[in-house]
Length: 277
Image (tube, rainbow, N blue to C red; front, side):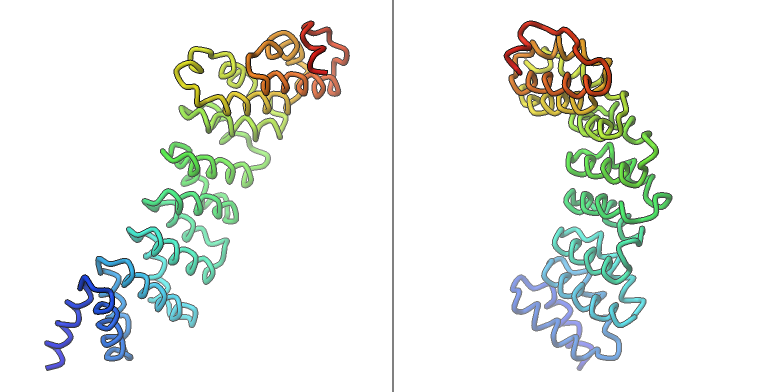
């Protein structure tokens, strides 16, 4: 009978062969034209991502026509354990609900997939700050570099007159986030970045233990030079100019130029300075 056949088809949705799964889904879909969500709910529970992707595609089609239950299921699928399925659900939901919908971005931010968390953090910059600030702030402690950096950048965009999140980033246990925070603070002419970046550049023991931080030291020197604070003139001319890294020394020259334009032109600096001119 049909009930027994449906049970067998339901079992076939878990078959190892994709062709068998696809045919079982097609048949069940044809049998449930008046209650398709029954089939889609069964597919969403399946262990194979291709079946769940098929369900997401059908939910998208129905949700675009205004079917609220389908949209609800589509949004829930952003939490799928497969990154491609989750991404498809996120993209579809965002197109339907709009890029300013905070709940959509929050669902992506809560994902187990770093790439989707990063995308959610980036898109959250389009949502109301009061809806996404807490979630973005928590991402500053994310174990994935791209995720925490993107979260910081979104907070910077959402709070152009408030340096709080950048100051938090500056004190992070993650060096990459400290440096990114300093770069963003340099644009704002915020001198809070000075001491942490000077400390990073001066820590030669850390450099010996972690030679991979060379690019971060270089970026830290760029941030200090970009800040161009007159109070750094002596530092640029007597300390940074002596660094072993030529790219860091180059920023000493740039820093003096920027700082001089903003204040104390003509500062007498280290003799080695002439070679950088």
